[in-house]
Length: 303
Image 1 (tube, helix red, strand yellow):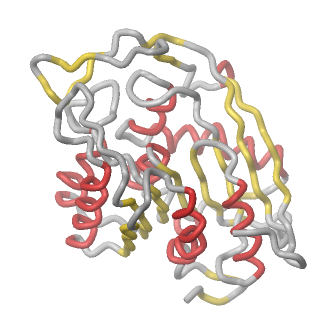
Image 2 (image 1 turned 30 degrees about the vertical axis):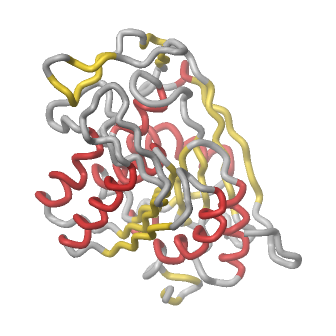
């Protein structure tokens, strides 16, 4: 997790994307200091009346390892919430040690805001494959064009990762588009009820993952590493829907994965809060190794 002398350093490109260029996310925002009100007839539904169209600009950081061979289709990992320098440093060291494949990392900034009624919330908390479609149609072609790389189409060579709602986004991407992604890395996953607009098909948002979706669906070809801290979030908020406990949401999700026989690892971290920096420093390398197990490394299989 620190820069090592003698280890090849990857190149990092910074790209800019504007809402006016997106056909999928033209942009919304919720007025500052506003939240929403619970629906009096449905405790799982939050009515937000202060959200409106608004432009955004997002940054995309692209890490290309020194070992990448131009013209070859590379495996890659898509991350949320902007440029992740710690990920890039970890990949420099892990790739050099042949502990993970030679991969490209794409850190995508969110469209601003948080939770219901915001652009970030719309992207990360919506229970559908829409964000994965946005990445596929609007982000990846831009990365290939501007960074001179070729990205694999093989879902086994594609991973998603994030923290908080970025982590729920990572799981949602792979769940709804397992034809695109097979590997998921989640820190402090917001597997709670933050979806907006309300969808009766998934009335409790990402809380549905452990409650219905994972238990009632055939197992998908996913490999999942997930973490939660014992001091993670508990936010009953105005909804009082009993679906805003991050610790329980992650524990229940791990239990559901175990019951269906998924390849997963769940780290419950003592004395760690939400998206805890010290926790990430300790666990990110082993999380990356676990997520990429089974994928070829320089002609051989990872352990």
